[in-house]
Length: 326
Image (cartoon, rainbow, N blue to C red; front, side, top):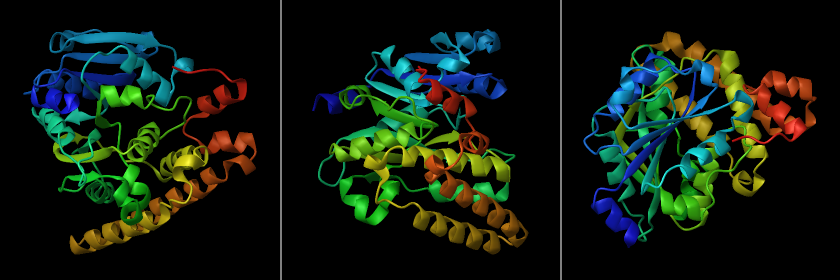
């Protein structure tokens, strides 16, 4: 009840952003955060390597608090937990440094999504935004974006597991709002994880009887034109995170959802008379699948090859030495 009241009374909202080599896109992100209809209380930046940080006029647009860590200290879960420990806000919005708000109502729309309820009255613990393609986004990636982030909002609960499977847990820290009380109650993000800290936390949310909301009205511009090799490596790391957390992902296959996505994207390309993009879809999908299968079996692969397949060689070096991240 207290959590609901906070949402209705305009909650205090902090934004937490891990940053590495900030560029113009990040500065535009800060500028737009300073223009929100529901004001941001504070933007907490956890910057990797102080030598890459540049000060400038954008800092006047928001209440900015910057903390520096080394590259060796960075960890997908621990670094975000560090940001969360510095916030006392009712709601924490985690973003990546390349996700630009699509309008001035991003924070307001995320709060609306957090205020929704599950079919049995379940409290929404986290709400993620719709990711729209950037202007330079390639056709295949545009259709993949529309598949993963449709126009319709939804609320997912434990009752959806038989229907949605692994996608029940899906959420993205590219832009995702969390109720701080529930975040702390569930222990925050898993630390020393290579990837997928948002989805692992989402599984805990669902299993604890809460709900995850997708707020299609909350929009951020975010897309990547990855090469086939980059797609392979990204899916390798994603599969490693699943293999390392069988308590979350065991028995929940994502392959069926992947096939459905490929077929949907292919139909969209043909319908829009862009069949020439089908080879790119096939090659990219094949690389994703190969990376996923190898990542699932990474324990049976020599470590030098594992490092070569991963986007994050430093993670494996830290894992070998037992070095903590933050």
